[in-house]
Length: 218
Image 1 (cartoon, rainbow, N blue to C red):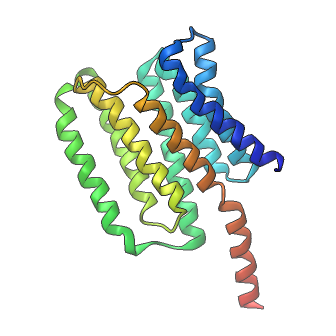
Image 2: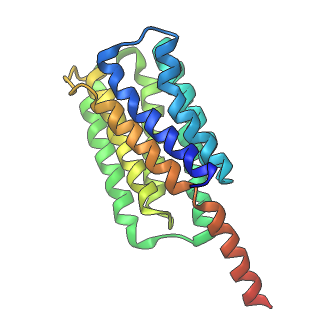
């Protein structure tokens, strides 16, 4: 096992371990460090694999993990920036491997589901209406983009699960739904692990694409 793989495994285990904080409830700042540490390591893993955009996305999400506990809107902003980097990361896959016309209907379905959820959650958004609408538009764009380009299925699945995790948070905050303890974190951590691993394959694919292009023009 090489150092990069070890970094990924440690990050994944540490991220998943924070599920226990639902019951341990470690006080700040220890709880915040524990919450963000695994995602930070996953971001560093992505950067070590030259997946710069995915790495930046993970690090902004880790920042969001901390800020959500301190200033909720600031946390939303950090996550929104993270999703924008994920959009750019998926577009990079599209640049390398091309568009994925076959799954355009899935992207349309993502938008439709997002609009249905919006109609349900809208009445409870209150003072958070504007930032919540902006955030939902950005994460919907991120997930839809995952299906209009050729990208690893694991990363696409991660994008969908990320949206599910955020939907659980929104349902709890805006619709007073009792979410099962740990459901938000296990879906969130699982999504980030999938995206960190899947999106980090871009470096080798880029190298292969360059070699194939050189061979074709030789």
